[in-house]
Length: 270
Image 1 (cartoon, rainbow, N blue to C red):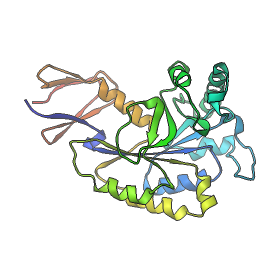
Image 2: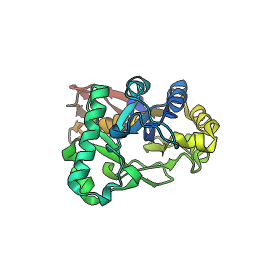
Image 3: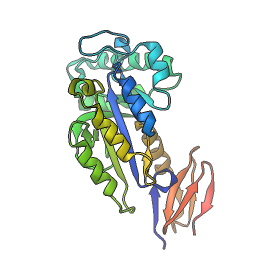
Image 4: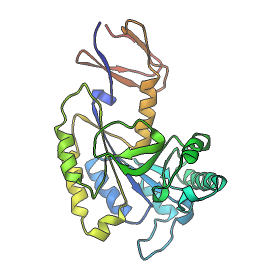
């Protein structure tokens, strides 16, 4: 019997994903940095607050949003950013659905991700999300580790960018045991870089982690979609044949050989 491991696209064993909230104008500078270093981000936006002006940072307009986030993911953050665990559950449903409608009209595709406004959620809310078309949601708790999420509706990041970002990046880059899968997930608000005058930190981070052969750079929903493809693989009892019923490719490591299993195909592994 040979060892067969599932892995990330192109046989990579590490994934980096970034998540930023509120759709403030400072996202323009952050996206510019991400694009420079080919880092992918997920941006959570409140559809009812688009274009709002505020002393704490103006929000992007509809036209800005339509063009800025190309190549990244736009996800929900509720319509008006309430503390949803204190709201009637019917109101929470409306907050999410109205947000989705507005964002989907802008991007022209389903919006399937969420981050909880003010980090507020409950079991009742989590249980409702699949019926609202939401496939994952990020919380504000952090792990300080590189484990893959076990609950996508209570998805914890590795860290907020203010919490030992560079130190954790060095640790992440040093990981070399390819028999494991690792995730580095960073979250925050781009306006914090203006407030704390530390744009140099996120640029240093992106430069450190960019262009690595062992890292897959993904949005939140790209990770979720790939994990679903991976889970749907069908193996024989001997593990020597695999069928991929999904439309997208999956990747396997078979005794050190990286094998692509294209969507809709069945192949013999050994």
